[in-house]
Length: 231
Image 1 (cartoon, helix red, strand yellow):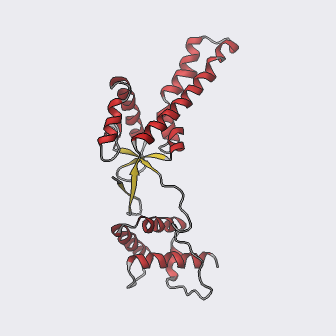
Image 2 (cartoon, rainbow, N blue to C red):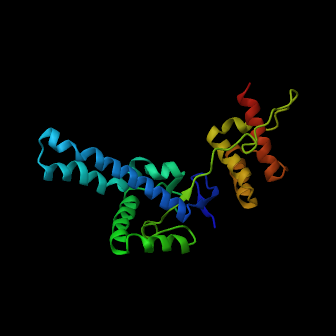
């Protein structure tokens, strides 16, 4: 089951929720990072003649306890494990998660891990929840999605243009590379409603009027934009 997220351009984009396996593997990689950090700091106190209590609280315990919160906050919804697994925390309403959402996820993650048999209940919750949410995600209004792999030339619909190509919509100059990325993603997804909404948005921004079908219109916009940008 996909999670539909509305972008700032008012276009709905479907993402696949990260599977239980993806989330477990990402967590295991994060634990390896934490374990590596612990190994690094264990041998330092003796060398620097530091008091073990103060040293471990400040240098060891503090970063480990805040690892999930800080990594998601500074890495835009990702941790080292999530980066490796190609996943990311997103808001269900399409907005950027804020510190409050990350804080809720972090607090409930700690409660879930301690109170629920080392994570059994969160795993079950993710598995049965249609949007791939654990309790922390439900409370924060977030989920973890699987980012799509880099698109190929066929995916982005870039094709060699004929030498006698005729520009049909000069107003595509008003669009940006980001707009093209949204159009290509909508076409690649293939959902009729998403394509219709994307075409309506492009027409609204550019003022273009045409009788072409939404798909043909968007493909023409991409070709015109390609033609203009390579001149």
